[in-house]
Image (cartoon, rainbow, N blue to C red; front, side):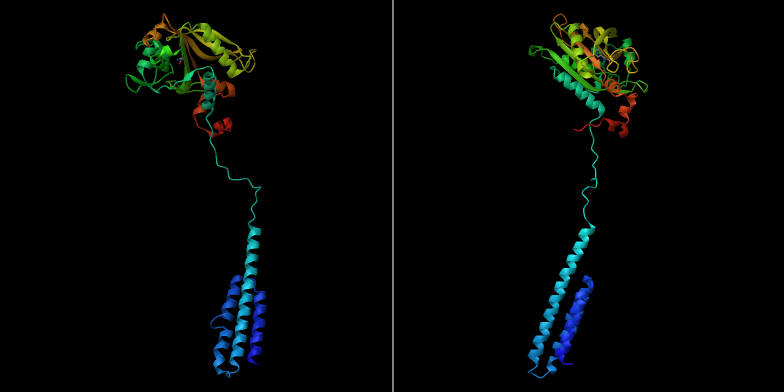
Length: 348
Ligand code: PHE
C-alpha cells in the first residue's frame, strides 16, 4: 500500500469513528490518538526524511491536508455533541412555572392592635389626640392623683405589682388623665384625648381575667361639658364599633375619680337585644366604665372645677375583641399560638 493510500484509509476510518462517537470524552480521545504527537499522522510527517526528495512536499501537504480535515471533523462533531447535551439538559430541567412558589411567611398585626387602631381611628375622626402614657408609673399618678389616697379601700380592687413603695406598673390607663390635664393649655381650646395601652393587675388568670390586658382611656375637659356629652359621644362610638342599630344605657356605678360614675352597656350586636349567649340573655353587653371627672381630680391637676368640667371613660379592647370574634378565653391573646393569631390575619 502506498503511503498515500495508507493516509487515505486512515482518513476514512477516523472520519467514520468521529461520526459515530456519541460522547465528548471519547471524541477527545480520538483527537489525541490521531492528531496528537504520538499519532499516525505525526509519524508519517516524521518519517518523511526517508522519502525521496521529490515526494516529500507531495506527501507532506497531503498529510497536512488530512490532519486539517480530521481536526475540522472533530470540531464539527464536538459542536453537534455539545448542542445535543444542551438540548438534553434543557429537556430535563424544564421549569414548571405552574408549581407553587416558596412562601415567605409574613406576619400581620395582632388582633388586639387591629381592634385598638380601629377605635383610635374613630376618636381621631372626632378630633381627639392620642396620648401615650407610661407602663411603669408613679403611685402618685396611678392612685393619688386619681383620688385614691394611700389608705383608700378601692385600691384593693386593683392592688398590684410594685417596683418600690412609690413605683408600680400601672393598674389602669387613668394616670394618663392626670398627666395630660396638668400639661394642657386651655387657652388653646378643649382637651380631648384617648390613651391606649397595657395595664397590669394581680388578677388570677382565668378565661376572663389576665394579669396583663389593655385599656383605652378617654378624657374630655372644657367649659360646660355635661353628662349629655358623655352619653352622646359614647353612643356615636358604640354605633361605629358595633353597628348603627346599637343603643346604649348608663347604670350607676362607682369610681373614685368620677362623680357621678356609670357603667355603660351597649345593646347586643348579635341578637339585637332579644337575648343570646353573647349578652348572657340580657340583651345588653357591659362595655365600659365612665363618669364625670371628679372635681378633686380636676383641682389636683390645676384645673378650676368651678370653671371647667369633663368626662372620662375606660374601655377594654380585649373584651371588645372577645365579644366581636367569639373568643372565649382572654389568655388566647397572650399565648402567641399562631394557630389562633393567624385567624385574624389582615392583608396590609
Ligand atoms: N380606670 C377605670 C378602671 O380601670 C376605668 C375608668 C376610666 C372609669 C375612666 C371611669 C373613667 O376600672
